[in-house]
Image (cartoon, rainbow, N blue to C red):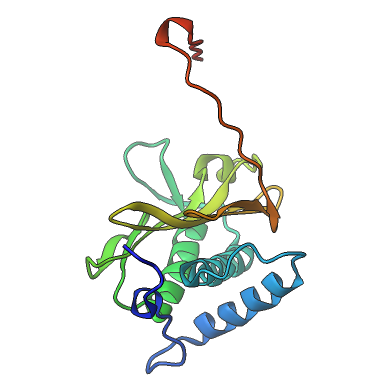
Amino acid sequence: MSWGAPASHEVVMGSAGASGLAVVAAKEVSTRVKSMAEQPSDHPLLLVANAALEAGIAALHEIDSRAVVRTKSSPTDPVTATDRAVEQAISEVIRTLRPHDELVGEEYGTSGEAGRVRWLIDPIDGTVNFTYQIPYAAISIAAVDDAGSVVGVVWDLGTEERFVAVRGEGAWLDGELLSMWRSETPPLAEALDSGG
């Protein structure tokens, strides 16, 4: 699949019913990206992901409630009001900018059309840590297609670092390209396995 075709990454701005939040988030991410030493990528899906992330961060700061509103699979699998608010804010931006894409969120499930692009949203990856104020949690957003991951953004709640990855282009931490190290995979007999 070629991402060069404009129709595959069309961003809908200012359409009927477009949310003020989506427009504000898009402007905010534009300002932040311009202030980075080097913009990682101009991939249109990354621009959407970053706009959605900005809306999620805003919701996080606005709500910031660690109160558990329900549990999912077990009593130790909590959902907070913040989880729900962050996912709603992210989803609203994506639905506004990419109305024909499918969204799969951890708290609200699947919505939208099963199309070429599917958005995966974990509003607070590490909710248990978040509820106990342990600084290891993140907002995670990814866009995938039939070939796999296209773009991903992760914002670390503890360090406020932004990780970005774009298929075929690379990965960045706060605008700085991360170097990748590859090695030959050792034979299974020489592999070290660790558990804990």
